[in-house]
View 1 (tube, rainbow, N blue to C red):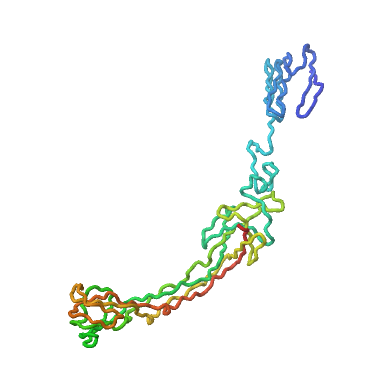
View 2: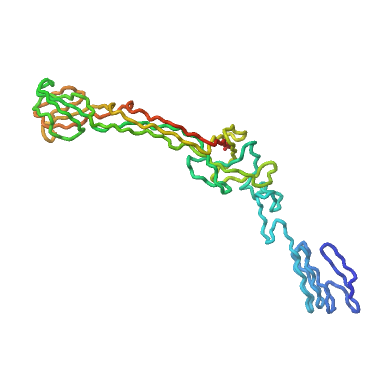
Length: 402
């Protein structure tokens, strides 16, 4: 046997051999009757999944599998059987890994990982968490914000970091109004006379209890006239207690602004920046921050003047009351009775009806109304606010319109 030529074309290499000293040895893809067998048929081509057929000669050598395609190796010769052709090499796209799984886009590495000609922010795979935005104004830094009440709990940023707590709207303080409460009972005097018109035989009694029920009268008399002789006297044991005062709002600031940095996260935006979307707890709009008091740049009209820390020296003076200002106000009514269970009335004496003639046989009375003590507002000086809230480390935060 003599090899006389080898021809290479594309991916297929065929060798032509000349067999000598044999008769009836025609070359054929179907194999020969030579004991060594003819070559097997070629494997499937590279463009489709096909199966090559082996040579039909005795002991034929199996055809080689096509390269690149998914073909199955050729079938061996029909006598002793050639070795099966090897399967074609598999063709794979660059968007699949060696395990056959699709390659996902990494939105932060500046590369087109999934070979769709879209990098990071421009890739639709990243659209829900990243976006392109114009660079922050000169001297300003992009932030995400969350506006809260004073001393609210912090919520983590989108990157898992803790936000910066800034205080906004200093409350310089206002004191609660002072008030005074008098305790005790006014003393009201009633004078009765044995004769009519409050002219003769005066006997006096002092009443301090309001609605004290039916009681034996302190004035022993058989009849005549009575009158209340004063509108009420503040007793010596009366007390005056101050109430109120203190700060109306103990919080030094009206609210807070929590900020998270917005860093450029990838490529695909050209001259713009690829930024990460905010976490659900933060506003879905961009804001910018800058140290110190500043006017907001164009495009960010909403201004927040905030502070990183503060000192609070606010206080309110104590409320006080002037006992000497207590007065007795209102009317007093004393009803007189001629029997012990206070069912037979002999008349009533009130503060403003002057002298009143009463019937004979008075034995009991009850006080149905008596003057009450009062403390005028003027006697209770208002609480005075002192001290201020002083912010430190000022930062201006400006946000795009909602």
